[in-house]
Structure formats: C-alpha cells, structure tokens
Amino acid sequence: MISIKIGSSERKLDSIDSDWINQQINNRRYQGKQVCVQIIINYENINVALKTKGCPKGQYVRRDVSKKEKEIFDLWNQMGLNNPDFQPNNLIDFLLKLHNYK
Image 1: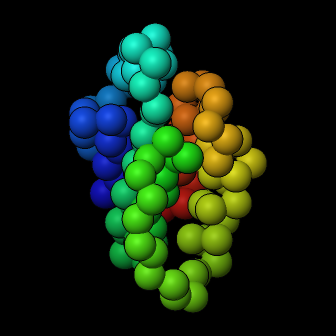
Image 2: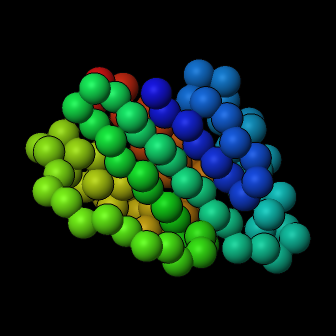
C-alpha cells in the first residue's frame, strides 16, 4: 500500500492523478504556504515514510534498511524531492517509478 498526504489532503496511490498532485502543491504555494508531502510505503518487505522539507520535523527511528528501501530513498533524492522547491512533476515521476519496487 502507498498513501500520499499533501498538506491535510490524504489519498491512496490508486485514487490520485497528476491533476490532484499539481492542484494540491500549486494551491499551497500560491497561498504562500510550505508544501508538506508525506508518502507512506508499506509492502511485504518495504516499510518507509518519506517527507519533503516543508514538513514539520519529527522523530525518526533509525534502523537498517533493505536494498529496495535504500533504492527508494536514492530515487527520492535523485528526483529532487529533498529540495523545498521541488516541482510537482518530480513527485509524479517518483510515484510512477515506485511500481518497479513492488
């Protein structure tokens, strides 16, 4: 299961589209708000939570990550999602590529 939360709006991956992502991110930026995107990925052997820089700081539990989890973290970084000015298309591309990690 993959869920995505942008600000206070949360949906499962199978119920979102690029228009929803663009609208959520662009509306928040237009209003001068920080954009907080949180993604929870929970498959049999993958259990990670990802946040953009616009999210409040939280506590993290440190643990060893699997090879696939590391690849997901690397993809997050490659797509520029650690940058506060990331583009909605970077998030859309990231979500599309997640299908390779099931």
